[in-house]
Length: 454
Picture 1: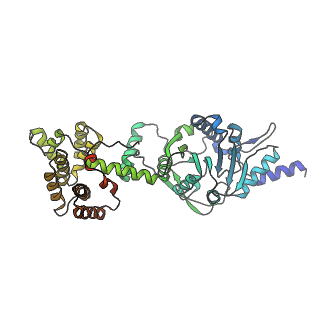
Picture 2: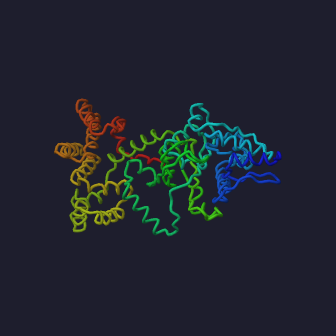
Picture 3: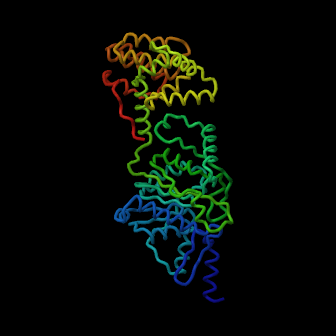
C-alpha cells in the first residue's frame, strides 16, 4: 500500500465527517448525508444574528465558546466568518477532537482555535466565562435541557446562540396552528403570577431513548429530550436569559436543507445574557408590584355600580351582576369576559372583574372596602374588611390581601398589637407575601404605581 492509501484509510477510519464538508483547494472530506445545507444555514443565521446585535469592533473584543463542537467544523467556519478575539471549542468525545485534528492536518488547514476535551461541567468548574456561547446539534442529545441552559447562563456574558433539532410541526395554516396552541394552553394552564409579566409561551418536548453508540449522540444510555422552540424560549427565560427570539423558524430552516431524505426539523434561537439579571429578583419585583396594585387599585364608580355596590340599579347592571356571579361553565365565562374587556378601563380593572367569579361575595366586598377607604370613610372600610375575614370559608386570596390591608391601616394608626396580629395572619396565609408593602406610608399607598417593564 502507498502512503497516500494509508492516509485515506486513516481518514476513513476516524469518520464520519457529517457536520460539514472540510475542504482545501483540491480535495473535500465529509458529507452532510441527508442534511445537505445544514451547516451553511447555521453559520449564515449565526452571522446574521451577531451582526444585527453587535458591531464588528465589539466582536473583535469578544470571546466565544462552542459547546459540543464535534470535529470543530462549525467552529472553524465561525473563525473564518467573524473576527472573534478568542474561540474555544469544547467536545466531550476525544475521538471527535482527534477527528478534527487529523482532517485539518490532512488538508493542511490551520486554525488558532483552542480545542479541548470536556463538557459544560468542565467549563463551569473551571470558572471560565465567555461573551458568546454557541451550541449547535447538542441539546437534543441531553436528558435535562433546562439544567444545561442554567449552566450556560453561568458562563455567558453577552448572549447564547442555540441550534437544535426540535419538536415542531411544519404546518403552514395559521388557523390550525392557533387551534393547536389553544389546545396546549388549555391542557397546561399557564396561570402562575409570572405570566402577568411574560408571554404565555407553551413549551412541549418529545422524548426518546438514545445510546452513545455513534459519535454524535448521547454520552451514555439516556432518555433524551427533543424540545419545541417554545420550550427553549421558556427555559431560557426561566434560567435567567432575556428576550429569547427564534432567529430561524423550523419551517424556514427546512427550506435550506436540500435533501428530502429525512423528516428533519430544527430551530435557531438567540437570547441575551447581558443585564438580564437574576430571575428571582425580577419575580420579587413583579410580585410586589402586582400585590401592591391589587390592594390600591380602586374601581371606578361606574364599575362599582355594575357589580352592585353603589346606588345605580338599572336593568343592565342587574343582568351583569347576575352573570358575573353565576359563571357556571366556560362558554358563559367567555361571554362575560368579552363584556368585561369592553367595560374595563385598564388591564388591572379587567383582571379584578374577571376574578370575581371565584367567591364573588368576598371579592366584591373587598373592592367596596377599598373604595370606602379611598373616599376617607376609614371606619366603614375596616368594618367591611373585618366582615370578610370574620366569616368561615373566606376566599383565600381576598383573605390574605384583607389581612395586609388591615395590617397597613393599624400600623398607620399606631396600633402595633393589631398590626402584628394581622401581619402574622397574613404570613400564615401567604408566607411569600412581599411584606415591605406593609411599611409604606398610607397616604402614598393609594397613589398610582409604575407598571414593571415587560
